[in-house]
Every structure is written in structure tokens, then in C-alpha cells.
Length: 95
Image 1 (cartoon, one colour):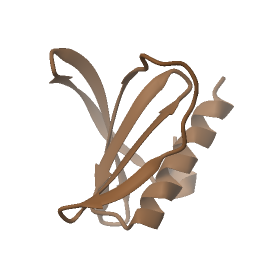
Image 2 (cartoon, rainbow, N blue to C red):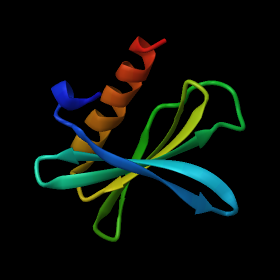
Image 3 (tube, helix red, strand yellow):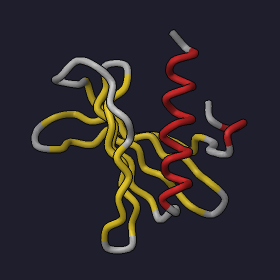
Image 4 (cartoon, rainbow, N blue to C red):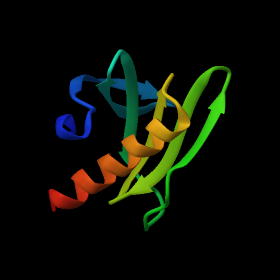
């Protein structure tokens, strides 16, 4: 739950990407939505979030606690980095 960090969970779904079932969680930050896609990592270890802007959207990719994470939103890059950091902290606390 990232509500205290300013990113309440709005919902989730299962998508299929390249024939693989992928969990998608949708968070909100003010009037913006963040779609987080995640699936089991194929490589061990954690990586820091790489945040880039492309075609008016902000994208983040990183690996944490055995999952590949990919987020997309129209947030500013600094807000996306804050989202990734909050998610990493929250998942670390749950273990």
C-alpha cells in the first residue's frame, strides 16, 4: 500500500505480453495514473530504476526482489523516480 507515499492503489489486471501473463497494478498520484507491469525476473539481483521520457510519457524499468518492473505514466521524471523508490521500500518491508 503506497497511499501514505502519495500513490494509492486503484486496481489491477492481468495482461498478456509476448505470450506471458503479466500483472498490472494501477496507482494514482494526484490526477495522474501509473501503470506498473511486473513479472518474475529471469536474472538475479536488484537494479536501480532507469527513468526516461519518451513521446510525452515517463517510463521506468528496474528489477527488485525477484521481479522485473516496468512503469509508465505522464508523471514528471522525479515523481516516477519517487514512485519506484516508494515501491522498493514497501516491498522490502513486506518480507
